[in-house]
Image (cartoon, rainbow, N blue to C red; front, top):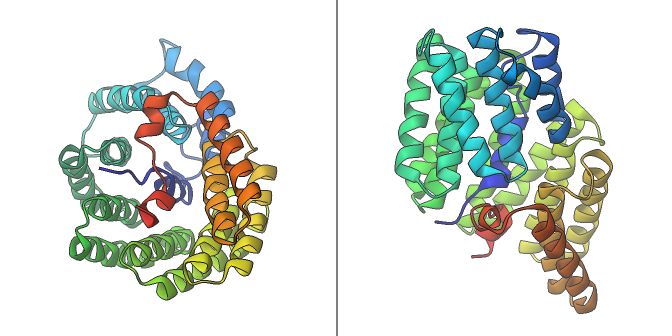
Length: 319
């Protein structure tokens, strides 16, 4: 099964995993760093909490969960899986029916789906959804349903994907202060589903809606805004408007380079997508150069095993 790792990053990053001001400054700081794409700094902030013997289980479990998220977002999937599993053990000592446990379970379920284990991943996500539903945590429920959409898309279960997408939309509308960023994530996911089912015009419209929300919420210097520009550009190319596509993708790459840097999984996958559109535009030497440089950078940054299990939305749109 081909994976959907990178779009899932955007879905998770749009809403803080544990909310704001929930436990201590280090946890809050790491949470914010992950949302900004500063993964190495987040991991450095969290490591002392994970290793300090006198830390309470709740705080340690949250640190392990966030460290797992940061590692998954840079392609270190085995390390992320280990951290999520540790977090579930740590958090489960107190209560397996709380929002922290559900968050770790949801993220591990997402990772399992991305790695190709749909059965295990979906089982975890449904269990997380049960907990979130009992707690009436609408933001968490929306995120779980979006991860389930990813799993359904990977298996080409279009009817199930649209059902989960509808549930995510309903929960996002009830998510209070998280409603707007979640609505953008729903739009992105809807655009993705439209893309893989051949509804390119609808996909472009949905991606534009997400971009509009991100620009309002975060301005033009944020990784989610940059990623949305790339999605809009890719959908424009699918609709035959290569000139607009290249302009939007160039803008998106510039934003991402200035916010998360050029040696980053998201940025480099964006460059690979840009190379495809350059090729579509007939700019063959430029396309080859961008593709070669991005591929070499990916190979130097990430273990080949991780590259095999982290195919982005671009690959799914072009199987």
